[in-house]
Image (tube, rainbow, N blue to C red; front, side, top):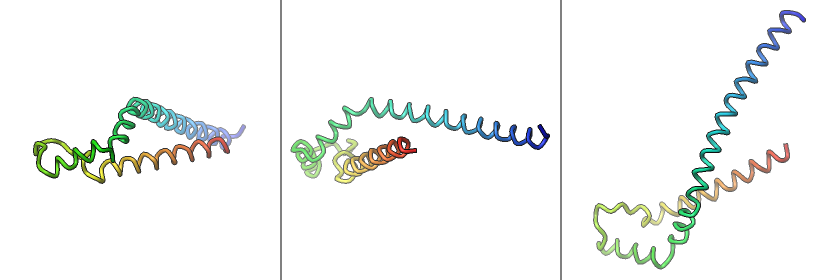
Length: 106
């Protein structure tokens, strides 16, 4: 084996080791993110049901009439915050589905 071949081999092993390190870190981060996501699914579903319900409408109206404290955090009563979250969630589900499909067909 020539020095050039050995150098090429060493460079390839270094590159693959770097890819291994980055892949391990990304997969570990994804695993942690999915665990966090799984842990809030019930909360998310409850929020999804609340948004647009009679309770939400009543809470929204109460806020509009000034019946809720001014210092109360109320992003959930904005018409955009929850809608934007639901839309982003749907986009992420589609993205994850596409990734699974691409991986299975690779």
